[in-house]
Length: 568
Image (tube, rainbow, N blue to C red; front, top):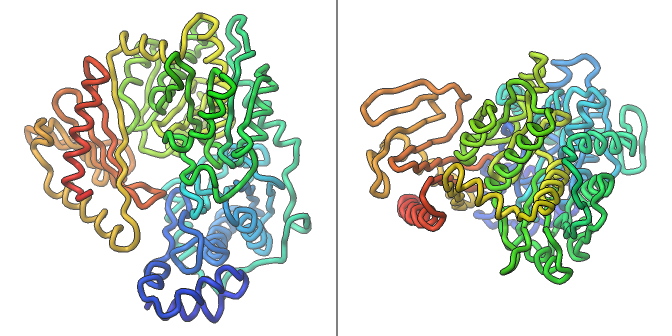
């Protein structure tokens, strides 16, 4: 089957010279052919994501064209005169993929609005809502290494598609032949004709104005803080710097090595602001210019990493810590200024810090927890909007460095977060406090919470099978104790049930998902799930303890325990 598919591609895939060369290079190499053709690139609730290259299990103009044709068929069945918006980031072939998608939509009679330069993912969500489109896509692989690219799909509300929509679109994609059924008009950059039009500065400025409205503007603060900002060679430079400057933060320095778009990410092979290695260039520049704060956005600028200057050097702030800092800051300032709404609501995910519950209780905020993925936070905002209660929403965050304080978009927003973080930093600096001081004060008030993410990579077909086997083993043989700690309960989100140690069960209200949550004695939680965007198994640990050192020691012992289980 793999060789038949390969042979068909050799004959028919003639539009991209890179693909022609790659197909030639793997001739007679059964292993390499299998890796590229053993399955179709999976279309999930986040769309497509995979390694750029030739084959059905790779991102290329053909797999993207097939997906876009299926999405076009779905739109035409569900909407009269449908329209879509398109954005793209700095990754390899992103612009080509965006133009290919536009050409397919256009030939299918769908009106297309496409940005004429790379833009943050949240700007795509904004454009969909502003232009009243029926959907949209952004070409990005978020924080994955440079060999990846992808295709996120959005609903008319500017939120990533739901599971139901994804299944319907997948059914349409399955019916499309990758070579024979894809309709495509001629389109390239600079050509705007028929149903394809460019999104200009007016909408970009409207987006920046919407972000600026989220500034809380507490009492007099000195905004002349020294900021080093790196877009990690991605899409954030224009919008982040423009928004900060419009709101009084003028002292911004960008490291030259990471200022301009570059899809290979030469100084940052894994452009993920969650990890220190991705911030090394920014940290070096921040130390060189004696900056107060370092900001780093990922390639599609929906997430932000932060480091703060301290007496002994720069200290990184985790996604959970920043989520708590922003949550507490927003509540504090809104309460002080009388702008905290009645019955306020904040939203986070099941894998984010349990400390959020303490902060919510402190300010009388209803905290809702959803499955992993910001689309579920966006979905909750949409439900509030349907009830004309969207003003109750004050903040949403996830542990993977995603934040949003307004309802103007329905995805995490690195531009919005950058502005709030700088304002919060300047506010506390005016009080003689660092953000590290503030998080330590919150630990004293609510208890010390320590979190860590363990990720184990499973590459290729055999890796995928092993990952599935591990989840099956954990699900079918639920342990009574783990690493010397009794298991109080297990939440299996795949069957929507919670199993208690005494044999009782309870129903779970969240949508079904391949996630297992182990709640252990001693305020310890371990949540296991396969990544929806990378070939990785992820384990999220959360511990409440007396000290950070104690919490870290407990988590380290659990990482060793799980390494034995999964054979890492």
